[in-house]
Image (cartoon, rainbow, N blue to C red; front, side):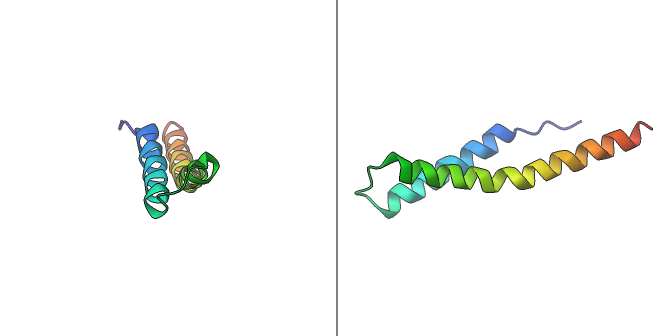
Length: 65
């Protein structure tokens, strides 16, 4: 069994995107713009992680049969 810390990975993606957005525009004050970048990065990261979890679940179900 392996522990997978998904929240840490998603936090890293979110924070990195927000930092990049703020670094690109130092005058940016609209939270919708920089938090939107974080939300988009998180969304893009969730899909592949979800597929990994689904495949792992399928493998586990197959091995118990």
